[in-house]
Image (tube, rainbow, N blue to C red; front, side, top):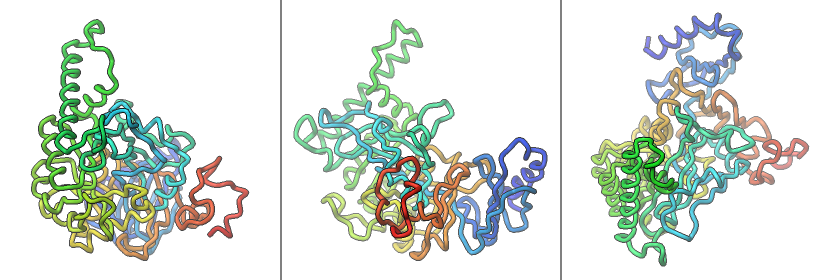
Length: 438
């Protein structure tokens, strides 16, 4: 018996006493369970309670009395998908006044009623790193969201242990941020401007340290420097948009110089510098895989083989949608494309889930079906790499947020009139006739 199953059994034995004080547990039975961390279970049971995963094991695992059973025989259950780079919510970031604006917050510009959030749920995505654009060297603070059903942004926020809102910092280099002044005109000037601001942040950080809490000695509060200092201290991860091989190496150089933790985003030329990326010890490289590379000159050499090269080099690989560059509803296709190019199946599925969680500092909370983690999971009609497979249900924190059998939800999955309308009081108007829209 595995350690996971042993722990689960112990929890189950304690439930008859605990049940009166807790919500009713839910047991998914009969599914092929892809845990990500640990071998697959051909005929398994997943039990959730209180928004957490309470037990995972084979069909012989006891189900507590009074549990709500959901028969998912013939289906597949896997952890919710993690999108490390998305633009759902119609977000805005920095403006044309300066190339580096670390004080700008996605929090202040996200439309929580955007239909693309429901579309992401229909694609099995349970966590997304929502970012501003890449037309700046630094376009603002990103936001890590749980894709719960919510009325206001606070309903989707992820909080750190200290109560802070979880999110990163979006930087970029290459073509996008090269514009007329005050923006840089060259790659070298781009890197120089980033260095200049991080040096200022180091000086600000030192003044705060020397003040030792004495308000009379503290420097004037600077929201720009505060955000950069959080990156320097490791509290805020830098998500760096970069494509060309030389731009990738510039990011690695900056990370080494200033010691910030970094996730490389896009990395179209990763297959050319996979060894350098792996040796740099970055948190990971998040790829976008597409059938027809292009769109911009620096992405012309984008290859599916980047995922393979990074895996072989020992790097951590993740995937993202960059929604709307690719559609969140078909996010699982990334793993299938990577496997078609030669990536191992296990690592491709890991890239869709656990690797993304690690890249967002959420690996202890989500990314795998493990006891004690958040009850974020997806029920699939078949194998996750099959083109015929559909997401049937998506659960976040133990709550079902998407059900393909529900016409209101199915609309977001398949499209039709109203599928791109902002939400009203609910996902759609209850009085609206959805029958003809499907």
